[in-house]
Length: 243
Image 1 (cartoon, helix red, strand yellow):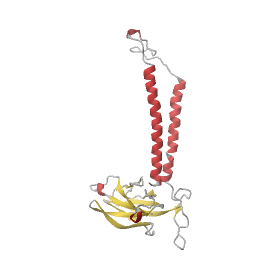
Image 2: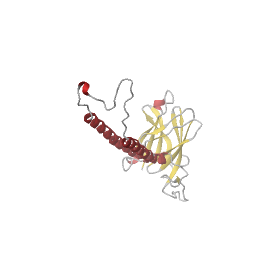
Image 3: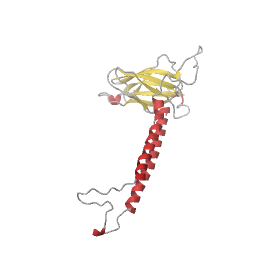
Image 4: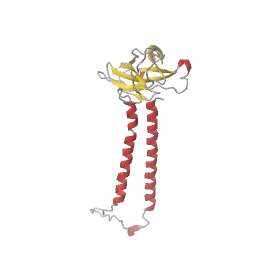
């Protein structure tokens, strides 16, 4: 799970919790009023407190305290959920030039080839085209990013993108024809690639096992989630993460 997917999972759990609380209160309220305020009179002896008559407006029976509570409490909840939802926005669309973001600034290396800081990201490129992906690792070391291999996937030759666990990547993306959308299935991140426009996506590859499955690494799929033509269903790639 990447940072983004873990954040969205936490956000989903939070929304489910509040949905359960609001749903329980609403249905308990409904059941209570349906049972307690049932008419116990029969026949013509029943008198409606609203004074319902044909062609006459019902009586205005309002409760200011109830109406204020019914308006203010949901408003506070909506404001809180809106504020709480900002957390993944700060991670998914973090400013690459903000040194205070969780990704830091672009990695720099000293004369020995080591990173000058642990909190930094690497820049890679992703290009969509009917119906395959092209990955560009720039001048990164093959231990950090490698896109030189291809692999058979259900009878289709697809590219393999190799990334390192624990590193941050900023993928600058574009399309050569129509709109595509690389979806890193296991990492929980997706963004559109638009022809004539450069978009970006943060990638934080992690493994489910501590050693990423050993020397072979852990592999997952990259799918296209924007319909892009006849072979859209076969536009895929493999991402392999190494420890």
